[in-house]
Length: 541
Image 1 (cartoon, rainbow, N blue to C red):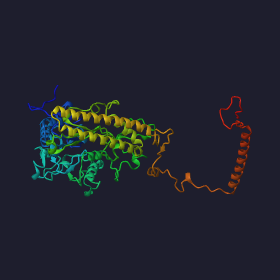
Image 2 (tube, helix red, strand yellow; image 1 turned 135 degrees about the horizontal axis):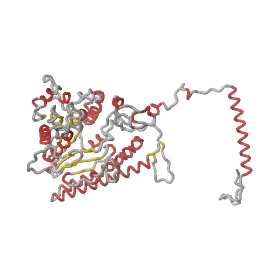
Image 3 (tube, rainbow, N blue to C red; image 1 turned 90 degrees about the vertical axis):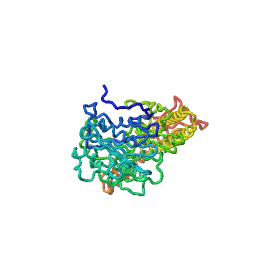
Image 4 (spheres, one colour; image 1 turned 180 degrees about the vertical axis):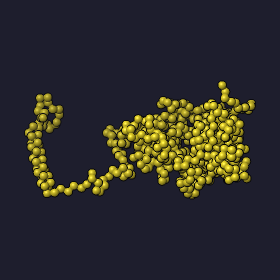
């Protein structure tokens, strides 16, 4: 039974690529997603509530109907207000959504959450200035709304202030700050969001010298920053693979990364059901949540990531469609493959697979296996992984460049679709094969505390990786002066006499043994060549 309906009219619907959320349509309109905490929650109609719209539905409908970011923002806002909005779940931690919406000319950040009735929504959107970058990392980032910018720089639902007053979130008198009024404070865990904001701003605009330390709202950071230099697709992919390497928050360093720099930090949770061998190792969920780890940009539980690359109005005039670069699994252990909406093709490597079973045809699984295998000896294995990323990326980028050049000269849409689809399929097949090959190479090359540098040599000479000095220092491996285990022994006179007697006795026994062996040794053959010992020969004892 239908839970509700949305009027479509008779307009033609756009073609688009769909992942867990809508990704990009034929007009180069692309939408990214980030779940955020919010202070008002609602239940969906499917669970007894009144709300019909979640982020997935909003993105799909927007991509079906709109050609521009402005259209998408307004449509998603109107749909949420009319039909009600609910978050990823009913908890405040995932009650809100942030969507990044871009077209050939503009980029907007859109925030939405339920209203206090559970049957409508509150939303706001801010335009990202030209040549700027904005960052959403599981926390709202839109703050104040200057009256003079309404319509041009920001848009919002008409109820944005009324709901805040009714819900007791704002007194109607002080400054209106959307983030602080509707956003959820993560308090001690706030670096989960703000550290990623800082890192991307710092990489995009290093001269600003932003600090990685800020308050729970990231108040020290602007909504967006002007990019210094270029921020092209390969650089964005590199940022998505980041673990704060080279900074004081580097997740490949320190005792939390283990001896070999594993950047993964598993999700915090109680361990009552883990069945540890030692029951005293078990912790409760409250205990787990009382501490914190850094949250990297690239994270092991990422199912997929993408970079939408528009070539702007000029590219459109040159018949050059936007490229949707898609990777499955964590970005640091994956390659990005080009897709085009105009191709009518999604490679099978990206369109198949399940988390329930390893699927050899899926792009996700070899990447996940590489990521997990490389984690144990990360500092030794990751340079090998990086070489594969670089080699595949260079090949795939060239395929994409050639396909775009050829497709721009195509005489029909069918020919264009064939050229782009062929390049997508070839790129996905290449990356898929490369990552399966990499996994098996890693399995043979980096294991059991050693790295085999030449597996094809007649005699293997593995390099023992042991443990790095920083970790050995941290665990107290090296001897410490005065420590009982490593105390200096100074023998007295009686000890020296005993040692000398033992030495003499040992020498006598050794001489006797050598004499007995010499008397029983088989005589050499006449020609001086040694061979098999005869059956009846003297084998000794």
